[in-house]
Image 1: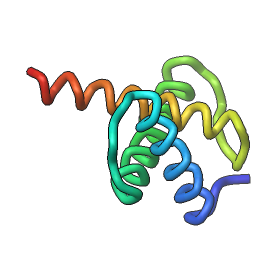
Image 2 (image 1 turned 90 degrees about the vertical axis):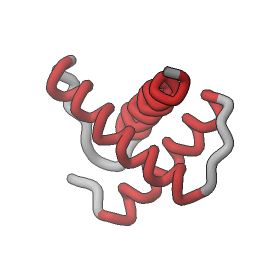
Image 3 (image 1 turned 180 degrees about the vertical axis):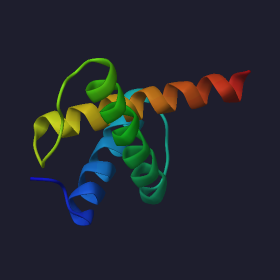
Length: 83
């Protein structure tokens, strides 16, 4: 079963907020949502296409993949800002 728009928003906000805390950043709710959703797409691509791990549905694995993608996104954005 796939995620609906509300599910993606919840996963996105939680993943973005967790990534923000781990990376020591301070953003607002909208930025957390954007980082979380883009991170979920990035994490889903890496997990599915490169690692062969199927991800989908409203579960802990989806949150972990979204969180990992969001952390990677914040890390890469930090490198771009410094450079």
